[in-house]
Image 1 (cartoon, rainbow, N blue to C red):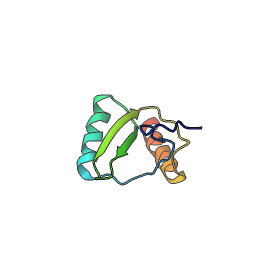
Image 2 (image 1 turned 90 degrees about the vertical axis):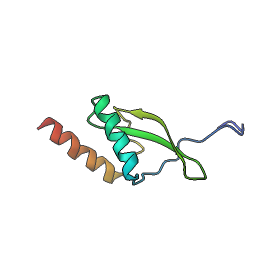
Image 3 (image 1 turned 135 degrees about the vertical axis):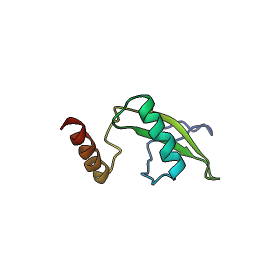
Image 4 (image 1 turned 45 degrees about the vertical axis):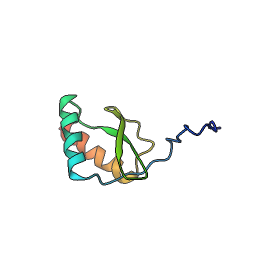
Amino acid sequence: MPPTSPTFVDTTDYQAITPEKALVQQLQQLQKQIVASILAIDILEEANGKLYIVEYNDIPRLSGFSDELKYELVEVLRKEVL
């Protein structure tokens, strides 16, 4: 059971988003800098819409991905391997 502290944030709730172009460019730059084929990005959004990148995973756990995203990932990895 999660803590009842007002600072506790439940991070198990997720939602795939279509990021704005500027954010995509920043994430692509990050991807190049760390030489990663794929990234899973954890982003928190404030009520006012401001986004914060909390962490990134270059070997992401797939349980939070929709089936559509999993198929996209398979295609990215297939291109890397072939």
